[in-house]
Picture: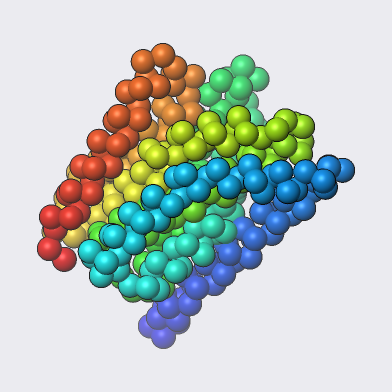
Length: 269
């Protein structure tokens, strides 16, 4: 029995990560391979999504700084990028499907509620748990279940998810909505500095603090970071994200991100 448990503990994360990788690739490439009769727009599409470099390059430099500062395992970094770009999409997609079924078939919410609050109810749980699962798998496979590895892996998983989401949203606008796509990508670039990478970093820190019961961070602190991640994502996707909140929410996200960074940075692991 112990041998079976040992094999499950060792190989199940690898199997689940492999499944997520394959499924994520399938989702992404199947969608991008449907130009809706507008194949000639692919060059413009590639040019449009290149605008995302405005946030990708600075954040990659920041990640590289953290990797050197905390001596992050290369296995953690590489796996976080690979699974963040693929498995994170797959796991989140399953989460959205499950929550959508619950809301539509079990709770039977109204069309108005689904239109106004559907994204706010679904995305924080489906996407944050999906990205967090990527972080857990990476840390289990690499055997680096520490808060500093969780912080960096969380940033990478969130950023890579943001990149894929920006690409897919822009693709849909250009090839399905028949728009030019620039408005979409510019709007998303403007939000990228304080959204997914911060949300996932907070969730990952809280999750590892709870799972490992580390003395350096209490259970209450772990729950706080998870709640902060879900709360920020909820307000970002909700109808409440208007007026003064469009200024206060980015400020809150950045400040919480800095607080989480300073908290983990001061730990001795």
